[in-house]
Each structure stands twice: as structure tokens, then as C-alpha cells.
Image (cartoon, rainbow, N blue to C red; front, side, top):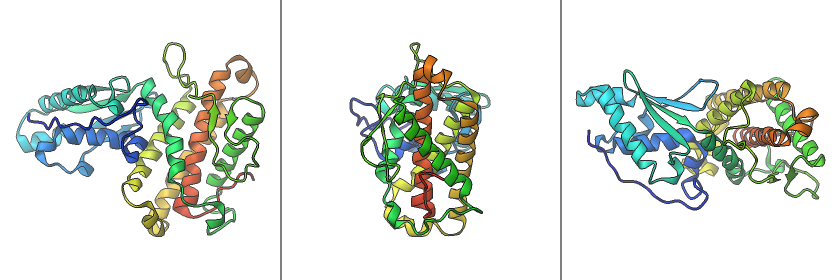
Length: 316
């Protein structure tokens, strides 16, 4: 199989930083671009490359049946094509820091499905990176929100989860579990960043993800899903899109996406403690869980304010 081996080797010491933000924000878009490079000679539109997050529940992974489509075009074995694409991806992973082999693995399973699995380091790197990138994309302040009301019918569960995230983070900062940026300034808006610890201790001494409770993994999976759905917005001028995204089906889709993230967060918070014994005996686990809280807060605020045009309350 002929493939295009041209690669973009732009990078810096941190790894993913230095590539386009839309790729930084979405593991799915990263992998789609990688697959697109493997079949570039076929002029296959990248947006038509099939790739879906697998609901494995225990690991972040993506499945692509692209080899089945290519097999129909080239009249070749899907397994042979899948192996060729996987080999390309593995070879390119040595050239691109964002797709380093330390961050993901590639497998081929019958009848020709390509399986990408993010490693613990890959998940940790992504969780550490995306909140600050999303903050950079926010254009609206509280005074620019069209409605400062709490919408009990449509958005209240999402607004409630956002307010809960803010309360948790403020309490954790007060108890010195974490340190938030601008600690001495009145928190008039949830633009906080965790500056201590930095980085957040996502991994243990064996480089395994500290977060292995099913509710933690479910929230991580939903965070990936949320960014996979949002990141294509950043391929265009976000400011020009804002006037159109709150209309009709688009608003319903964003609301549904935020509700799914809100539900995953509520389940996580009800089952995974941060204070008490966890704070005392395993403080790094408490800090990692707070990392999930700030990731959730940032995404809920972005969807509420930027896409739906409604208030993201600090407290209820």
C-alpha cells in the first residue's frame, strides 16, 4: 500500500504544545490527522475518516474501520491495509512528539479494525494540558451573558454542576490541598488554575494512572468525548460562529453534551471522596481528583457561556 510519509515535526520541549490548538484539544482529531497522512495518496477527506471512541470503560481508546473502506477502493485485504496503516502510525509516532509511542499504542484486530489506546502518560498529558487551552478560547465575561438567570427547566443541572465544581475548588484551595492562581483576589469569575501542584500528580510511582475507580474513568472518558465534539469549533473563527451556535439543533446538541458531562461529574463526586481519609492518607489522589474537577468546570463554563449564552454560576 502506498502511503504519504510527509510529517509535521513541529514541537517543543513540552510535547503537545506547539501544534494547532484544535489538535491539542482533541485526541480524536489528532488520530484522524494521523490516519489521513497514512492514506493521503487516496485524497480521502479527513472529515470522512471513520474514528469513534470506544466505550471500553477502563481505558481511553479509539476504533477506526478505515481499512475496510480503503479495501473496497483498492480491492485488497482489509487486514493487510490495516497493518500497513498501523505500521505507518507507529513509524510516524517516532517523528511527532504529540503522537509519541509513550502516549498511545496501535493494534489491528479482525476484520481490519485499527485500535488506538492512550497510555496512562498520554491521558495524564492531555488532562494537564486542555484546561488552560480552553480558558484561552473564552471570549465572554459574566457581563456579556445574555441571561443571568438560573434556567430551572433546561440548564439547571448543568449550572448546578458548574457551581458545585467552583465550590469544591474554593474549599480545596482554602484547605491547602491545592493552590489556585490569584488566591488573594476575590473570586469574581471561575478563571482559576491549579498552580500547586504543577503538574498535577496524575501518575503514581509506577507511571500508572492514579484514577482507576470506575466513576473516575467514566468522567475521564466523558471529558475526552466533550473535547472531541468541541474542538472542531476552533478550526474556524470562533467569534463569527457564536451568533449561530445558540440556534436550534446546535443549542440542543451542546446542552446534551454538557448534560452528559454534568451527569458523569455528579456520579464521580458522589462515589469518589476528596476530603477526610483520602486527603490525609493519599493527598496526591485527592489532588488528581481535583484535577478532574477543574477540567469539568472549565468545559461546563465554556459550553454555558460561550455556546449557550447563559450564566455559569459560582454558587447556588
